[in-house]
Structures are given as C-alpha cells and as structure tokens.
Amino acid sequence: MLTLTETASTVVKSIVDRDPNVVDGAMRIATGATSHDFAISVVSEPEPGDALVESHGARLFVEPGASLVLEDKTLDATVSEEGAISFALTPQT
Image (cartoon, rainbow, N blue to C red; front, side):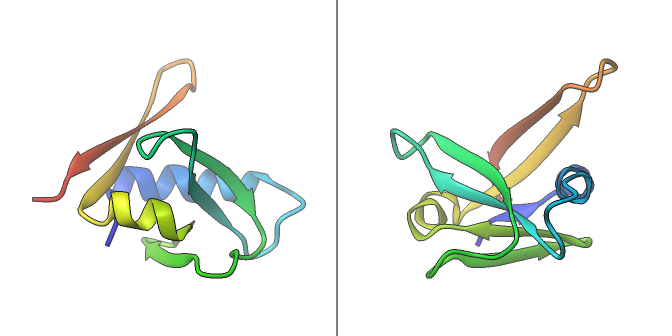
C-alpha cells in the first residue's frame, strides 16, 4: 500500500486544512490520462472503492486504479523557498 513520508503527510494535511469547504476531508489521488499520470483533489469523502491511507494525521483517498500503480510506492513532498509544492514517488524500501 502507498506510504507517505513525514514531510508528505505534513504537506497533504496542510493542503486539506486550507480548504474551508471541506470538513474532515482528505486529498484524493486518481489516475489521469495514463497509468502514470495522477490527478489530485481535496474532497470531503471517498468515492466507492477508494482506499484510505492515513499517516501522521494526513488522509488520502486513493482510487482503485491508482492503488494498483502506487501499492509499492512512497509519496514524498518538497516545499521551495517560494512555497511551491512538489510531490515525488519513490519505490518503497
């Protein structure tokens, strides 16, 4: 199952907490145009079949197609000095 680094957990939680329209929500990861493209959004609840990943207070809903691709990955995040957020996937060790 997808895991998150502590930094990614902090960033995901921060992004979700910034959305005033979402209470007790999560970031959702879904497949994009190809199996290695992903779409992320902040949502209040999962779609049917979504897996829940929780880490350090962060919550992710992962759609079934994305779960298959991400099952052996770790999500990491970096924040630049200007505040730009970048996510990266790495193989689990």
